[in-house]
Image 1 (cartoon, helix red, strand yellow):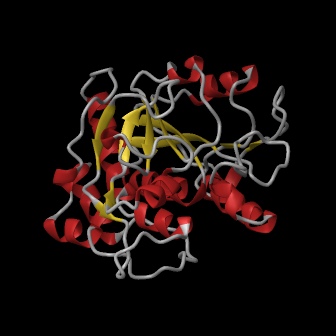
Image 2 (cartoon, one colour; image 1 turned 180 degrees about the vertical axis):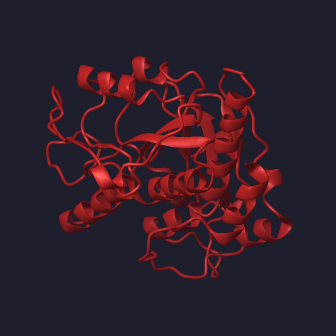
Image 3 (cartoon, one colour; image 1 turned 90 degrees about the horizontal axis):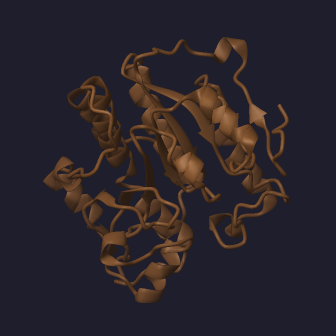
Length: 294
């Protein structure tokens, strides 16, 4: 469906046989995400809903449209600049299909429009989670969800590093030893909102003790903690709603949710300096954790 008032993109609805029955009392989450990290976030939340459909529901996905030359998503500054058009098309397609095949409507257009605000009022999300999304969100969107809006950013924001659209270049420029994934409340100040918590340290050096020059290799490494952290955030949101406490999540001790073995794995040097050719999926240890979280 055309996105009225948007300079690019569209609203894509699931086919009738793809739609899933939603539980009106469940925590309703809308996701603003794209690329591999956003895909991993979305797939993790899908796994939670598949197992616990009465506790958490997806209500909508807003994603980048990097295949459209008219879209204003800072494509020349962000990760999309590294890919030819055919790869951009494919990465957008798999993100959209991930939503539609799970019965989730997908929006690829401009978000600071009256059309999208009406769409948001139809989705009625209790909370929103953002990960690799190329548009700035305004106060009307940020202030909409009663349980808050959160951004997953692959850098050590608490340490004052990696804010903005090029966190991996920051690692290369600083010749960093480690980094962390940060989840924070989203504000109009980019990566400036209060921090909920961070992942354990993640090694960003290879076996030759240098930071790889390939940004996509660093992206694959920094994806490692995201499924576990997304599951923990979703769990906190679910428990808040079920407990009748209408307020954003303020703090999560993410590090304590990683076993000693998992922390050791995160701190190991990068073994393969070629970008992964497969899309990330929630790892079995995260899937096993879901039963205790929910």
